[in-house]
Length: 304
Ligand code: GRG
Image (cartoon, rainbow, N blue to C red; front, side, top):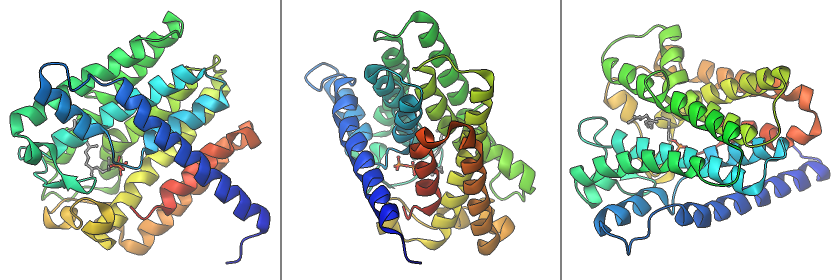
C-alpha cells in the first residue's frame, strides 16, 4: 500500500515524538529513583537495572499523549509517566520470578532474580511500587489532582486491577476459559494499567468534562484489550530474540490466549476492530488527539 507524502511526514514526526519521550523518560526515571550511592546499594542498583534501559515505554507514551491533550504541566506529565512505568516494571520483575512465570529473559537481558537473587527481586518490586506513589505525591500539582491520580493508580494496580488479573491468570493454567472470562482477565491484568496511563496523564491536566472522561475511557479500554490480543499473537508468531523475552511461553505453559481460543486470523481481525474502536472514541477531540490515535496504531501494528 503506497502512502501519501503527508502521511509519511506525519509518521516521521510521530516517530520523532516517541523517541524524544522515550529518551526523556530515561532521564526522568533516573531522577526519581534512589541513587546507587545510597544504601542499601544492591537494592538501589537492582531497582535501576529493572527500570532503566529497556522496554518500549508504551505506558509513558500514553501518559504524555493524554497529558499534552489536556494541557498538563510538564512535571505533572513526567510524574504520571514515571509512576505508571515503575508499577509496570515492578509487575514484570515479580511476574518473572519462579513462583509466577519463572522466566530468565526480560527486555533482552537476564531477569532481576537471575541477575541478583529472588529476595532482591521481591524487594525491587515492593520498593518500585512504593516509589511510584511517592513520585505522584511529590511535585506542584494541586492536592485534589494528586489524590485523584493516587486513587486511579492504586485501583489499576490492586486486586481489582493488575494484581487481580494476575491472580486469575495463575488460576487459569490448564483450564479452558470462555472468551468472556479471558477478556475479563486481560482487562484487569494488562488493560487496567494501560487505561490508567491515559487517565493519569489527563488527570494531571485541566479538569475533565464527564463526556471527555467517557470518551477517554472508551479509547483506553479498546487499546488496553488490543495490547493483550497483539501480545498473544506475538507470543505465538515471533521469536525470543525479537521479543526480548521468551516466546511461545503461553502455549508451553498451557495458558488460554486469544490465539488458542479464536485462532490467529480471528485474533488479527479483533486487534484491527479494537484499533478502529479506539479511533472512533477519539472523534470528539479532533486533531489534538492525533498522538493517542497514532499510539493505538502503534499498539496494534507493533512487532515486539
Ligand atoms: C506480578 C502483580 C503482578 C502482575 C504481573 C503485567 C503482568 C502482571 C505480567 C506480565 C506478563 C505479561 C507478559 C503480560 C502480557 C502483557 C504485558 C504486560 C507485556 C509486557 O509489556 P510491554 O510489552 O513490555 O509493554 P515492555 O518491556 O516493552 O515495557
